[in-house]
Image (tube, rainbow, N blue to C red; front, top):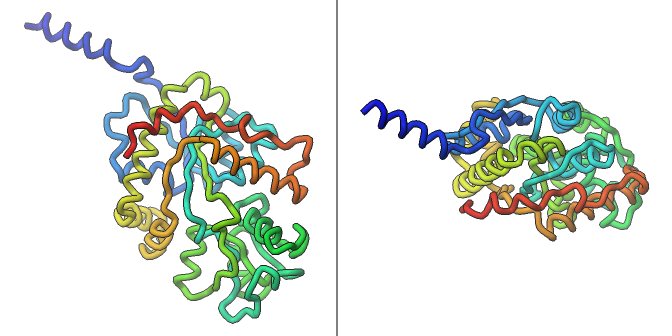
Length: 313
């Protein structure tokens, strides 16, 4: 009997993935992948260990990836593009699309500014190199204004919010959850959101080293993260409730954000590659990325993980 049990145990070991017991070090921004995946229950039965590191924003996450402190993480298209242009050895292996209602140029409710044309020579607060910066550039270009057509003041979101409220700036270009929080509080009015002028992309990214050495782990992680996104898309309320407790914001904020954003995982296909190239080209035209250092989108996007999404519904 004991011999049979031992043989059965050994057979189970033989069936276990070759990467059982390995570690995947993932960088997260608070309330993002880890909270979502735990809420969705997709980390049950994980045959390797996930070692999470929390970061306040994409820039320090990408710095950690560049230093080899983590293997992978989640970031928006803007910081990813700048990191790749700066020579960070990083590639995206999974893409996410969402509506851009929450990526917006905001003004005070009583502001005389009614259109992007009205922003000419006005003061706009945003983060340098952020998706807020991206939507300003795209909106100005759409309106036929040069990249320098408005005066940009580079401030973090908390300072930018105060600057708008005090009248130190005329507009604030920001993203979620700041947009939903400000709208629900009646503090702002949207002049232009990102729909139609920005692609609504974010990425799961990994270092070149991890893409070679931990490919199977990354494929499994991508599949589980995509499943979690699909779960939240069907009903955002459970994730919104968990996010609200974690971050300490009213539940109405994530409900508004998640409900209208409609995040979904997508394979890195020709459409994603084309949209990422448009982002690169926008930054080159604005003089933020030198032409000589601008990457080609297909060189920084790894399209070989599409099978990881095949079973996701």
